Image (tube, rainbow, N blue to C red; front, top):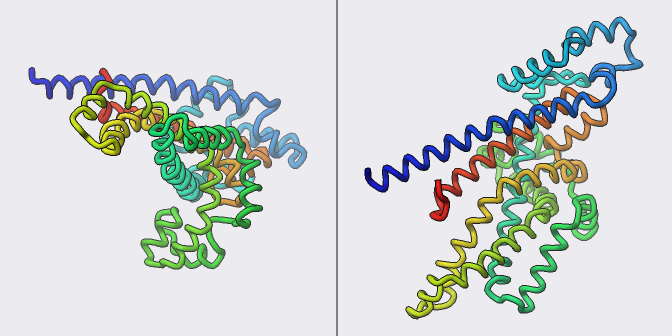
Amino acid sequence: MSNTSKQSGSLRRYVLTRIALAVPMVLILLVLVFVMMRVAPGDPISASQGGKLSAAELAARRHAAGFDAPIHQQFWDYLKSVGTLNFGTTFSDRRSVRDIIVENGGATLTLTAGALVFAAVIGIPVGLLAGRYRDRAVDVTSRLFSTVSYAAPVFVTAPLLMLAFGSTSGQASPLVQLNVPTQTHILIVDAVLAGDWDAVGDITQHLILPSVCLGLLVVGVFIRMIRINLIQSLQGDYIEAARARGVKERHVVARHGFRNALVPVITVLGLQVAMLLGGAVLTEQIFNWPGIGRQLIDYINQRDYVAVQGIVTVFALVVVVISMLIDFVNALIDPRVRY
């Protein structure tokens, strides 16, 4: 059997193994979400509608929603709803949770992508400089910056940024949101498809500050990981061999050290996406950003447990899927991975 066939078979086994491992992970997440939503006394209908309806009306609604069924039956119904991507209907405004994900998910996706772009644009070059000039002023400064950015919570950095650079509210100006036709539910993409470049500029202007605020959560991770792995890469034998051949130092760093230093960043990218989704909840609330995180806060305040359960479930599934995709990409690009 050729090496190519062996590698293809090994990669196939690796992919199937990761998918098999993801199944119990998803089940554990679903169990945790289900249990958390039922830790509070009573049931979602009593929590959200108690005091507004008579006892008979509450009992009728509890029966219609299945909350008077045995707990195992409720869990089985919950699994079936997740399997069909039907996360229920909210109690407070009678919206389908799936519609909420579709309509507001584009805003959260835009914010998360903007934060990742900011973290990469700042974190990668700063991490390279820190690793290249170890223990010098740029290295010490970058390590201090990465520690502060990682430790500072969103509810502290957001008001400071708003005071320093001015407050922005919403995803775009009201007229832009009204005039851009909805096609993908991703406002900046819809503006590009419509050819409205003034709207694109307005949306980008509103995106910058929330993206910087959220990106600060992970830019420190980018800097530290690239710095550490670049230092380790530059100590390898192949680096010494390249230098002995007369390769210029900047080429040694860029072509050899940088590529190996970037692989671990891709590996932990899935964890950083989970952190960004958690930070997006506060960021969207502070900047009045119309994403899923802001909707989640609103439904928590209204004690709409069906909406909260559905949104949290989607967040958990997204993190699992992204983590799997990152693992697959890492297996393809990292020659050190053994299947």
